[in-house]
Length: 87
Image (cartoon, helix red, strand yellow):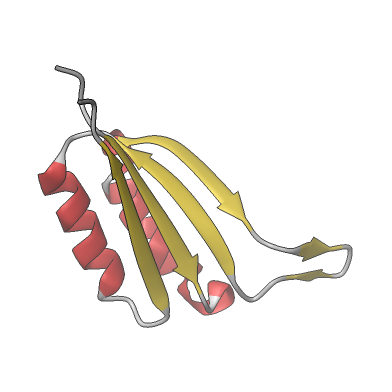
């Protein structure tokens, strides 16, 4: 049986103040992050104050739950989860 595809959508509402905290968790869970995509507005003279990061995780439910819990403890972070199972 194939492993589930676990995708997290992470909305960072205050990138400039929270990016370091979020990045610290990404480093902690780095061995479980298969794919990472960051989306935010960028202009020549400015960077957007908020953004979205999409992560594809490996490692199963325990890893997903731990990362979601730690991200959720950071003020201004919203996490949405998608799990695609092979049936």
